[in-house]
Length: 286
Image (cartoon, rainbow, N blue to C red; front, side, top):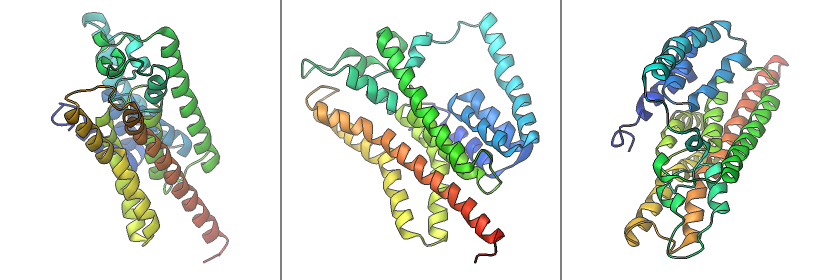
């Protein structure tokens, strides 16, 4: 899907993999490179900060200046500028699978079936989106609330500091959190969660934790393949997006962000398990 749409997902997956499994300057540079391509990977700058990895932070700052700030200055001076700020504050468009997107669809329900609200149908383009100011702030407020709650949970789980073994789990959890909390998270953004899913699946298989493996597979299925398949079938069945079954639309556009939040919790649990294991080893407990 990412290749068909001409999206940067595959390149971002490579950069995320480098962020998870490399250290110091390479890790910081990978985070900055991802941030220069799409805003969501920028949340991973928290990982080297919590590790007190000053080389990674130095690489992050240097590459951010080179790949983001300098090009942004050039574009702002000679370019046409970004889309209107209001577009980035969220949309109830049916392919926006995030918690703020769910909130906006609840706030703007179909009232004349089989016709959908225009923002549900055409909210994928700046020209087609006409979001009232109150709904813009609803979206931003929900996004900020989910993100801050998740960050607070991470800080409590790691006690304000990460070690090398915990860093990949924290990075994967932060990506799941950011995709769920973002005002806009299109369906193809789910590819950003693949490195974290691979980390979880390999970990569960290696330790023969079959329940964890089954849970990871179920969550992976609900992140994209199942909701996408059902939504595509809906579109074909009704020859377009209609309000023939609002309940079905609500359910299957809400499953993915909820699965992302559950995945965030599962990844944090592995992070704390790493900390507990190290602590037990330190005390001599087998």
